[in-house]
Length: 202
Image (cartoon, rainbow, N blue to C red; front, side):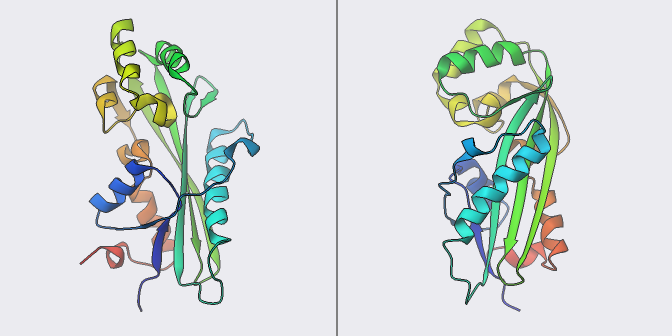
């Protein structure tokens, strides 16, 4: 059976690169879903609700009479001592966040939602990875924030970028910290009776 069209409901370049590097070339359809309408205190439930909102917004735009598509929605937040953080609003917030994060352990949660138009099924999962942050100096924090990289990232850092210098250790799935868990995606596809290798580009 021919594989369905794989759609990434995200504007994240990191998620797109992660999939492409793993052999999947998704159709990128960024969602205009308003994330501010979802307010929850449980990080795992929050990221799943946000991921579902993004995926469902794209599903609503696609034809359902020929629903040969599979939509992946993702969203990430960082929990630090019970407080949930998304992308910092501005540089000052990013600096203050890093001053809180340094030398501490945070929990990076990513929600994953797959909507299978072919089968009319939706799966929702979350993955958590513990992140040990380095004891960085105020000078290093200021220099990092000045690059602009933390402003585009949940958790205020990009593991695959300059922020990788300031992460001491990960406990759990490392691709989850970049934006989506490849092992979890493989498992979710298997639950929908798909084999991950069928989505690899020839």
